[in-house]
Length: 184
Picture 1 (tube, rainbow, N blue to C red):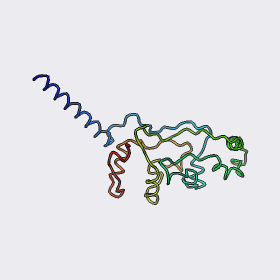
Picture 2: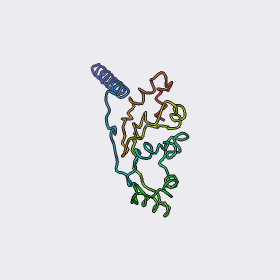
Picture 3: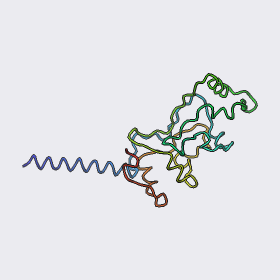
Picture 4: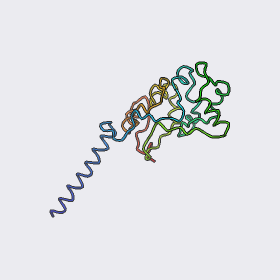
């Protein structure tokens, strides 16, 4: 009899603990292991402040698959070379970074950019419905921060489960909060 009571109490504690952990994660009360302010060193310094900010190049010009794919994609060098076939200088001086782009392009190689925005492996995020549905009011900056002002891109938001669910809960977003939306 004592073993059954002890087993029942232990089961209740485990279930209660798991329920509490899920509640805390969903409501942004705890954020363990998230990559806020993650800012990896890139092989070539690339300024979003210049390209997206000053030059006003649309995000989807470079990240072409954002509206049709799970991934926003890192642009291949031929996209960079659309401009850099003729633009080779920065502030009137030859740029060694642009020279590296040209050299790798001519060799048929690619630049190995470091991924900035990281999600756990068990989370599946799909850019396409977000970009398609909310393109007018839901901009890239909603999740990625003021990227057009960043010299070096960093992960601005926690991208935690609670952070995402809070956005999905907004009535104007009319988004699912079903677990299968992101965990499949």
